[in-house]
Length: 443
Ligand code: NAD
Ligand code: USQ
Image (cartoon, rainbow, N blue to C red; front, side, top):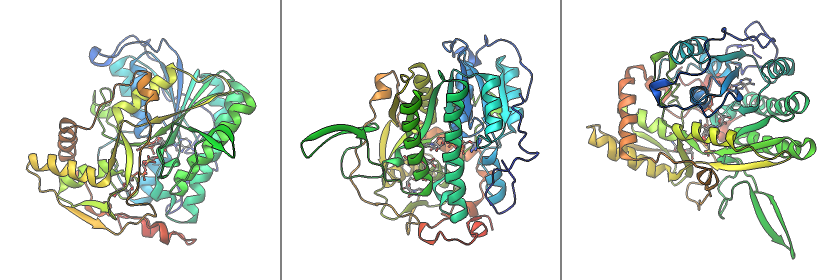
């Protein structure tokens, strides 16, 4: 990894910041008997789960959720997400501690050791060592550049995103094949792989009859950014590898995640999760909540009819556990659509506006010329029954949840930099010149 050259996306040349060796960051602590607040159980039974991208928003919450439930967890992360903030002048709403401090504190309060391996999965030598030293039963792969706007800043960021995501995933596939052929890959895809077709969206596959013949085929993909397309390419590569090498994979096409609190991340201030609200990494509902808290009009891009699947971060962690506990068969790429409800951007603005007013906030909206190229009024009906069938009990978006999210944002509102709120990247203007400084919303 990295280089952390200011104004450039990180590259893949090893440096002192990313040791090639998969060195555990802290020594093992007591056996995983204790639970946080006494509510977790131990149904993980010591199963070994490697969480790639475990320092990120979804990954950190998942690492703690699984660790509290008796899984033996190792985090693999090269900290590039933290570098993006440094490069672009962004910051999370919440004051997050270092990855090392996080796992140390978690060990102290839970008695459960999380191994921390700092390195880049695009560096196959590092990844090989990590695989061979930890020998995972499952790998949960969150470790990608996940912002659509970041991938559209300019050519360099598009190339970085596709290189990081596609090559990283190919490396994970090779590591499983060579070192742990029985290891189940749980890969985070995205609902945005499907785009917004004028027909119902199925879970991964669609049965088509064409000229009198019928087949079940991967559902057509129409990613709306170079980021979303990196996930499409991952899905194709994984599908091929499952067939060629009999690898078992579950591809989770996740919708937009909202919320920040999980039981474990709220157990101590050092465990708090990141919360992005800026124009590059902030996602729709999380942004609207912060905007309402600081009196910024809610930024609706275009007509606001853009409809997506959404889920609470407490359901993300539970979906991952369900996927781990119900592995795909060898040679199978199982696909689940991981969201619980659909909303349009206008729906979200209405909900946040209504709840904000109850808290005495003056919530306004503003229509911003859409910086993205996307349908603003469209049909959207995506299936999401498979995870429910396996036991997911969703936390739906209700008044209580918005209320608590708003209160959370109000608690941290002094940390909000208003300059970071505006949309920072225009799909149509993405060019070949280095546009980092233009996208650096803080300048
Ligand atoms: P995040 O950016 O907060 O976390 C990703 C983590 O992966 C970061 O800690 C980063 O440092 C690490 N990483 C990236 N490239 C790496 C590499 N080459 N080697 C090692 N570590 C690397 O993102 P997130 O919001 O937690 O998303 C996690 C995954 O879930 C992503 O794959 C994303 O595409 C997917 N997803 C996220 C959402 C959402 O709303 N946040 C929705 C759908 C899907
Ligand atoms: N939007 C606004 N105003 C804003 C922010 C967003 O109107 O201030 C609109 C966007 O134009 C888009 C929709 O809200 O139509 C969703 O945008 P987003 O930024 O919340 O989500 P997106 O860019 O699609 O990406 C996020 C995560 C990504 C994940 C994806 C899931 O960053 O990692 O893959 O959600 S999905 O959208 O289902 O593909």
